[in-house]
Length: 212
Image (cartoon, rainbow, N blue to C red; front, side, top):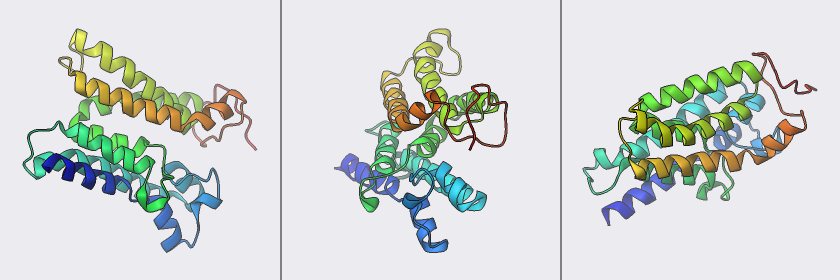
């Protein structure tokens, strides 16, 4: 019963549609009607500006962190923390408070790793920043980081790099998290292939996306 309660709390935490509510309450703007139509951090930055984007990212990240820490905070030792964190990601992606149409799971996944594997998160952050500098695309950086996470969680424990030993439950959760991120970016992947993806004003744009 305790585990079920944690799952429900984590899902409801994840379901808070931060960008959508910030847009509606403070900017009188429905994010779904602007930009990519997504309610996550990137579209919030693009449509509402840096302040709203940063706040959205931080809250969405903390949803994952808090959910992951819930077993420790409530003294439940019969479940692995990232399992509970995963339900926050599911809530963020399919939020009950926003018609089950949510974000792309990146910020909340960051929060889960921050709560359980911060060193692994730091490594993925470096991968993200390098990819972002080379290609100027947040979407591509997110997808590359997700792929690298899946490969690394399978390889690193064999060499005792960052992850000291195999934890197959954690490995499975990373693979599920990364898969969600990749699938949620399928439209972005199509635009990248067509050289029509949105860029940020930093980096080398090595793939030569066409900027409108």
